[in-house]
Length: 130
Image (cartoon, rainbow, N blue to C red; front, top):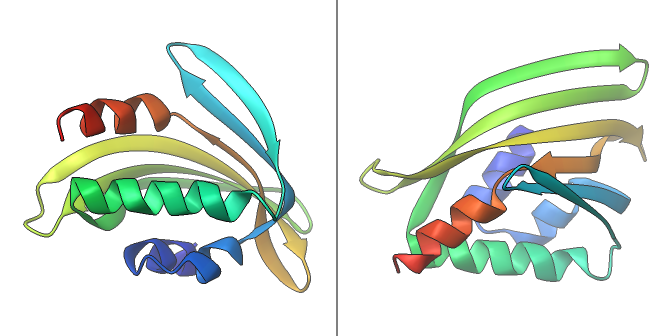
């Protein structure tokens, strides 16, 4: 996850994509409802690119894991719940959100195989002000 966070801070799309295994299960939560999708290696970079552009527009320069919970339910699998705080260069908060990552050993290292998050309504609200 250190590599993941560093890749976001550096807006390194290639390093970000490398943190995932595909197909990727994505669950987005908004207004108490969950929607599910599956992302391929061909479409996920564009999603991450849009997210990086939005972060740039909002002035996000840092992502801080405010709280982290990790469980390892079985060999080669971990589940990580992270409460992220997104900050500007002056350390002013942009917004915070929660993400749950399922990581599995793939090609010799842990990669994200599933992601659940509640970021979409928060980023939309932040972008409305810009």
